[in-house]
Length: 349
Image (cartoon, rainbow, N blue to C red; front, side, top):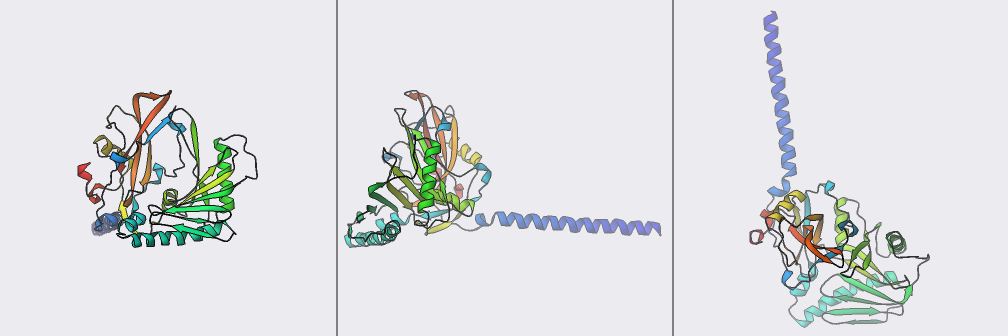
């Protein structure tokens, strides 16, 4: 009787263990397919666009790379597994407009959109609108607003500079960030922002003179939205020598024409591709192992010439033995962040 009981206990143990193993396998495969759903979908192929032959070299100068900053919110610990790619609607609209009349219609739409923005920044009556196939402007007694057909940038230049309600003793990081947050508090509703963040940037020129750029962007309620807004929904604040605001440069890039979400590689995988020569760059120097990587960012390459906005890893590389007025020289090399099976011309890099 005891032996029979032991047999039943052993059989039950085997049954329960088998059930537990089956459940673990089911959970594993559910998670596997959940994490690889994007890869299983047939995604449109993307083209890597390289304009280095007619682009200015992207070079940075600094005594140390830590001095260069730009407010990019991305951090490696975000562990982003996928990001969207978008068609550049300005590029598409302008390049598919074959006739002068069609190009004028493209500009009309930009002027209509810009007029809504203008009304948010002024109580004055708009009295002059001028536009052609390439550029357009709106002017009133308070400012001149200008747009062009090649991008989604609105320049607003005030006829009377705006004085700040506080004194700026010197242009340093703390004081300039204070100006950015003053701008956010004052104008976020005009921009239809729920919340803004500062993205103050700094770098030296070749003569060792430091330059700040005051940038604000709309925060997002997710890390992805914050990252996209940093690249596509920003305002640059321009000051004169008296630290008065003279103009705003508003970038509200149309990213409504989404292609798809794409799986992206890790920073470590991108670095391996950099060493294999799988990159694009405006540098006259080919990347080599004796060129130290000093900084990495995940960015969207989104210039006027890009027909597609897609993410890249941007590697800052120090040029060994090359200095300018005591400053180190850094060039940038871009590696596509999207997995190579979704890139048409990856093998030709």
